[in-house]
Image (cartoon, rainbow, N blue to C red; front, side, top):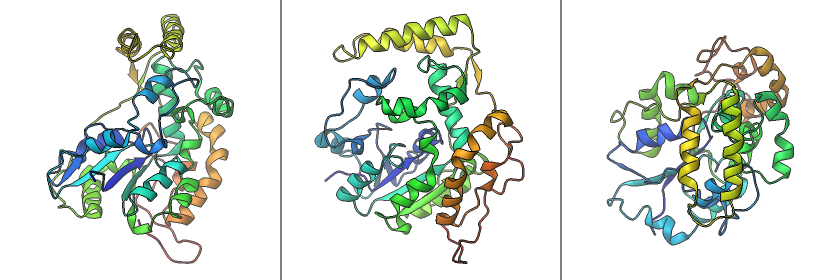
Length: 330
């Protein structure tokens, strides 16, 4: 069977696209030509009806037939490790169960990013594309449960996706610790060569071969303007219509409108401390759970940000004592 040996399993907006591209340069690795096949997200054909703006497009991209999924790996030369990257696998407990049932010895790479920054990047991605009608990050987060109840797709779960402690706690009921490698998002930015060497060691391939992570998926942040609001309404209406059309009908026009919305936009703007403060209580207990599970220090996620790139008092490579007194490494 042509199936993957390893997965970049999460998290969305945490550099997984760039990491996939970097690993694809290693001569001993074969990365799936479709970066995000989403095969393990369902047991069969996904429903393309309902959900939030643009969800139908994402759902139609899923490769759910077993033979089509295996075909993605059939061109891998003998002896190469095969991998794929679908960043929602960590978030979806049912996806992890399917991976465990089909590939019990799979190795899982998980990139963890400050959950508030991750959520903000997630919202900015959808708002700048004209898909999220709420133009304020905190208010969009407040609407999350209502959207989940209405069946909006995983990418709209801005806050829930960042509850890594709960997700890793569940993951470790199905996979051994040695099958999991945690990578901090900041490692990929500040020390890409070191992060890639750690990943290569984990996969059992030669380190020192790849040293750069390309800059990909940089989130644009257009200014709120009448033009943006008007085009966004038109675009969302277009997605609502194309949901009921076969194949790719109307997709070209909508894609061009989305590109127009983001053309010339500035990069994502940093969060204010007031914005961060409003969300910290939601994540605090889960961050403590994550620290207990991993023995690693993530307390800086709960403190003010110095700027969009640096952290006040951060100790990104730090390790803390688990409650049993023994530090744990992944």
